[in-house]
Amino acid sequence: MPVEVRLPTILRQHAGGQASVRANGETLQEVFDDLVRQFPGLAGQVVTEEGALHKFVNVYVNDDDVRYLDKLNTKLTGDEVVSILPAVAGG
Amino acid sequence: MLRLSADAYKRMIGHCYDGLPLEACGLLAGHADSGKAEVFYPCRNEAASAKLYRIGIDWMKAERDADERGIEIIGIVHSHTHTDPYPSPTDIENAQAAPTMHYVIVSLRDTAPMARSFRITDGTVTEEFLTVEGR
Image (cartoon, rainbow over all chains, first blue to last red):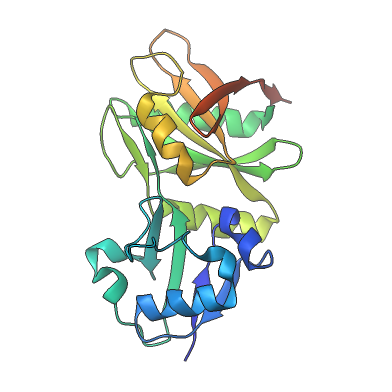
């Protein structure tokens, strides 16, 4: 069952302007792989070439930051909403 | 140029004072084309620091509300409690996460608050006019 993936404004240009898309996968990694298959422009924007979460994004499954779950190995059942957000910080 | 509604400006300044002694942060939503920001969303500073700020899940909540209003996030606000309203090296480095944004810094160093707005692209800081419209 596909999960809903919400995209921040700055990434929507790579997904035909959509705020929310659907992608398949039983883990976050599989969902992001499917996302890039559908929208190649998102390659490298969320997951780095080395296979880690990009440092400039925060990813949430429902309200939980995946860095405190199982990162890209976080399991999904299809009922979740995955949100990708810019990781904004400074001093 | 960034044009703030008077309401957004007042809420932004108030939130920065409310956050003392820590840095405060928030988001501005409006229209990217005109640079007009209508709504200020206060965000929790997840760094809980007087020298750093970090916006987390509050971005999602702000963006959902902005989507419903038909506007978008166009600006990122944070306070400098004791220094000039100018981007720090950390601000410049991290602006790569959202390079299209207006970056507003509110300095609370002096008696009156001072807000300035910048664009930060590829490590280059450019100040822009910041105006407040209406009352």
